Length: 272
Image (cartoon, rainbow, N blue to C red):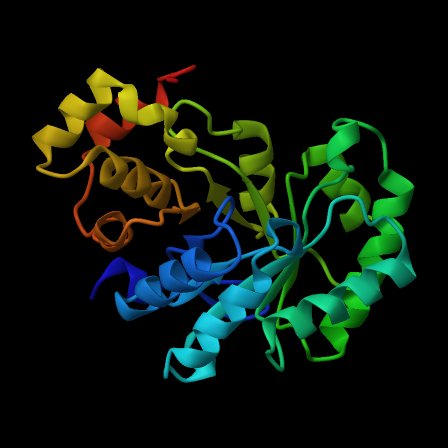
């Protein structure tokens, strides 16, 4: 069975396909619609979007037009990072659902622990308030799982100490040479699934000749090697592309990297 058809299981029992199709930086309209439509035709069953990406409308339309039963597709969206109060969070979720044109989504994440223009600022109190809105959304049945994105150990601990429903997912930047070990280990210890966005380091890793040689050893592309590495770390990769050939190939990762080569890759730092 292709990896794209396999699943991780979240702590609440919800199955989440092991590879997600990322849509960050894909513009709303024809490009986003066609990219998602092609991904679905080629076996992806997990689509990741966000209100901040500005493409929820096209993602939702591609899902609705796919002819695939809604229950077979896992849809993630995210609360914009700058929204840090209860009522605004509920309102934003309603707008996301209207944009997508769906009755429910599968996963909803707080996009970041701070607004993008204040990276690193302390919004602990506000995140605790927003998490209560996330719990209300979850309890409504309009979302099958809730989580966070870009949260570190301290951010997560504040939520875990006060929540009724724990975060089930933390989506972070993750690729060979940048594996955020502290937060990854914390999440895995607490049964929080780690999703890795930018598994190709937003393309920068593709210039690495050492990794290209290792990919050749396995008779795969460098992107396939990078995605497979993430999977073997029990992290869910979210590759993104707008090119049909790459979209298809990125899900063809049914080979296995040897333990020796995984140790080598684990030892790399500042790869790009």
